[in-house]
Amino acid sequence: MTQATITSYTLLDFISEGDMDLFFSFIEDHMDEHAARLRENGMTKFYVSRVFNKGDKYTIGNWLEYEDQEAFAACDKIWQQFLADTSDKFNFVSKVVPYRGIVQYDFS
Image (cartoon, rainbow, N blue to C red; front, top):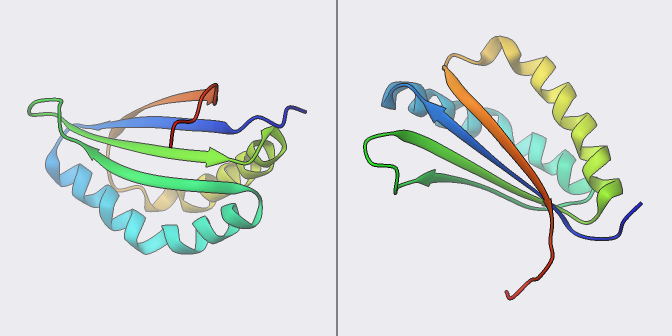
């Protein structure tokens, strides 16, 4: 397993502002406890941001970082279970596009 920092960036495009607001409500209701489990398993950063440079589209970006490949694999299992457990609470429609990467340079 690699010891490189692993990143995950997911874009969610919503068909309406109302659907995006439902997503924010879902985040507020469910993410604190879920994020705590992820942190316990090696997640180091978790951002949910509104993308503002896409004109009149409703796009959210989720940025996550994991200590290493092992942490990513452990957290991926947690994500799969979370999504299965909460799928009946998704009251919004979105197109989801995930990107995964290994940090090559960190200038922070």
